Length: 250
Image 1 (cartoon, one colour):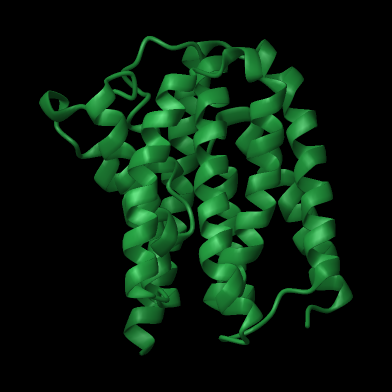
Image 2: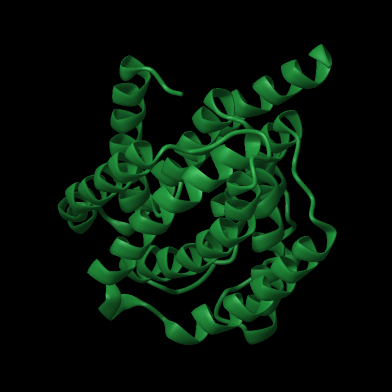
């Protein structure tokens, strides 16, 4: 059970991270996932993160619904369903250290992809591959934003279309994550999540998303891409260090 100070801190964290997600389409979920992995058992952290981010991304997709590119959503959903079924058959529960390591490594690996292998979300086959890979990473590390971003970096889409389309894709991914981890938590596998915490987190996620909308309107596409990279790489470095520390302590 979380104490009152921890609940207040968690609520503020959800507010700030939802603002970041609403502004950049990523980064916020990554920060929140790292914090939850420290505070809660892995299944509970995955479930609470999924509920919070589903609310945040779903509301963001609705706010920018006129900018969503729906064919991309369908392709990613089809690819992601394959990864979801594979994990359901295996029934894997990720280790905290492994989740943090993947959380930290993903942005660096994504940036290391050679230009000739560059993936583009607007290409049908790439969308299917992206859905499978992103869903797999999401079920292990809790987030797939940095990997998902590589499918949009070289596209000709505006920042509004990128944020809106990624929000819709991530909503689907978090819904699958909720469906996968909810039975594990309900069955008493390594912890529970209190309803009060869930309600508070969802409320803060919606508020943070609303606050980010005006700021995104005033930001240029160049500023959007530059600050997105700085935020993700800085956060990834912290989680990579935490994962290595936990792994060494085993």
